[in-house]
Image (cartoon, rainbow, N blue to C red):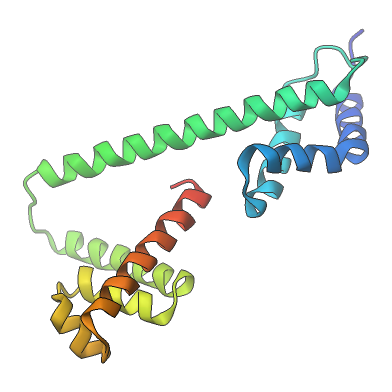
Length: 176
């Protein structure tokens, strides 16, 4: 039986209203990240809207939803992996390429640095952000950083390690 697009959207909406809690639980079970559940929930909804369910009289809708969610999450993980791989290749190519100094290149690099620093300040503690900025922007040694921050060198190492770990986790959550 053929369904119109509007009927299909109503059907999917009804399925998500009736089984929303189940869908959210399965997503959380698969990704183990509460902050991403709503994003995947919406992606799953859109996925089912875009590719119609083969038969709207499925006997075990929960099993079907589990399979769809599982496949969508695998697809998302693959997209993220491809993106990270292409980004890594791009960064390697930039490192290898001879850099010509153009005024606009310096402006773009400064703008990108400012965006990264702003992001760090929003997502890390003040000390963690300061330590990372001193290390990677100002190229300070641990001793210089400790003096500027008024802490021990071991504290500087801890701030950098924790800050980088938090940054990696945050970037992984957003798929970078």
